[in-house]
Image 1: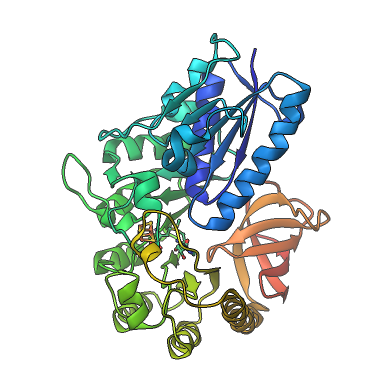
Image 2: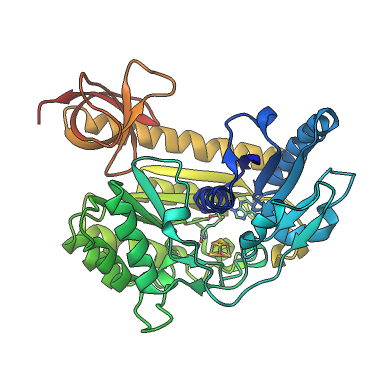
Length: 435
Ligand code: SAM
Ligand code: SF4
């Protein structure tokens, strides 16, 4: 019996992949363990999007190398860094025994029955969709299930390593998406999150049906109370998606729409394919049909050549749109990308200042938005006791905000009605009221 431990760096796509990796290992007879120290096999699922994520990986590998001196242990690196660095990771320097790219997880069962010393590397791309039977996936959450609808990205934004680390776009056949959604609904999941780097470019390989069709069909599967999707690209965000969202009440009124920069000049250098005005038009279109829609975004500060004026335009865009949440990053040059050839000319201290300014402004906006929620009754999907406040239950509302609340009876997976009584910049507080 092999005991395995998975450590995941990065985004929801990686969390979702780790659930597949865990499923494949369990299906081959492995047993998951909660502590690194108890494992015979450690799989590290990696992120290459920013330099910092790679740095964290190497310090983590150092920690495992120490453990390897004390006990027999096989160490594998999978995901984006595995794909990009491949064979250079393997060997005594880092202590890595196997490396698998995102298309090669089906090879994990090689670990069973092979000698401890065997090393292997597999980073071949496949053009076909690789199916993992839904029953095999070991989901972390008991309330919300990730369902991948596409892999890879064709956009080649100038700063982004994803097209190199995850390959070109591949779309999952619509019947297979529907089958997995039906499977998770039957297992009692209340929420489904459809995942892809660029979901609005989805095209069913058989029929050519686009993302709006997919969204409608998924929303019609019995038992799915809440449906979310990410990430949408602001370029070619079809009005059809807005209409489906308006018509289907189980699609959450919430969209993650990465802006990256509020300056059209910077967006052009980023090769995002839209201008500031086009982005704002998409927002106007969404809010025209669904006025209370919650929008979140990603922002990069300090892209090469970003002037103070460009940066001010990003702040201005935040003031105009008033996002309910943002993820903000300092630009970091990534290998193979076009922007890596540009001079990274915004000094680190200045990038830090701009990041702090973005986050400070956004905090003020969120405090203002959250203050308005006080007194409202919101539907919340309960995820169990809060991590920091175990005396309260914790869940998410339709806008995907964390809500911590007092309750005598709610348990994980329940939908509850919560009266909002307090707020911070990043969460709401409240109390459950009788249904
Ligand atoms: N597909 C999504 C999109 O179109 O925006 C995003 C995928 S990426 C994994 C997540 C976020 O990381 C991006 O939206 C961007 O803000 C950030 N990011 C990507 N490359 C970056 C870089 N080189 N430096 C800093 N942030 C970066
Ligand atoms: Fe990266 Fe751009 Fe593709 Fe998003 S759309 S994954 S930022 S290349």
